[in-house]
Length: 139
Image (cartoon, rainbow, N blue to C red):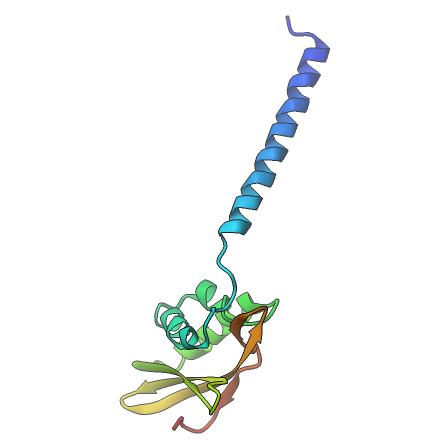
């Protein structure tokens, strides 16, 4: 027969084990998460293009400098898909390559154009969350 004290010890150590396991899981998950942005400005265009082509809002959110990057990335991809583009180009522009231009085209005509300012934060390059959607075609 199990005593009341023995039962309490089993429950106590069970709760402690679950708490320690949860903390370990969170620690590993945080350590394994990739850093936001990219280390070199030249990596930004191909990284963003990959996210856009694969319609991957989780990946795209890593490149947006905002606490609300998940929502912004998801919303942007939804709007981009609504253009029904068949070709997509992403490139850095500006004298200092300080802007990222996304041009969505359908049948050779521009149907969506977005420009993001590129900012450096903690040694990593990210997109400013306030993207500019150009109403006129990209150049």
